[in-house]
Length: 193
Image 1 (cartoon, rainbow, N blue to C red):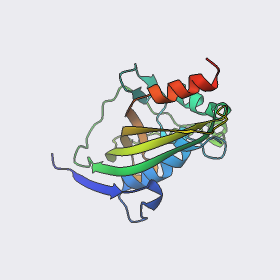
Image 2: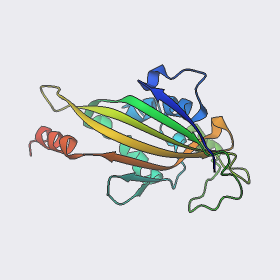
Image 3: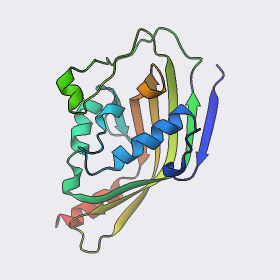
């Protein structure tokens, strides 16, 4: 199978409007991932409900369970930002046909859609499949830290995306590789542990 790869060097904010669909998805997704105001920047529309999220060697968590946890982090964190160094968008367009997956996508009712809990259905076949990978340094600042020290951690992330078209892309699996110990240690210090 032959795939097309697009590469972006630098912050996600500098991804051009002419970039590939996966890179443009990343540019829309990261502000919501970093947001501490989920009502203004909902993250739910970027995931299928049963998309597994894997962090290191921890057991997977499905998006419908993980996303609510992301929405309460503003209680403890006053700043979060991913500084992207390098991103790849791999077009798996030739990998099309009947799709058999372990997850299901459901159409929202009107009330759910208004709450920003939009899980778009796929029509018959997936028309677009992409894998977006990016290297970044995440910067986290905790509210309880009187010094407001920014904990910086290198990360490598892999997002498997599917959708009918560019506007319909959603994460069907997310894998995050990072050393969580600096964040956990600094969080514990702020909690007085």
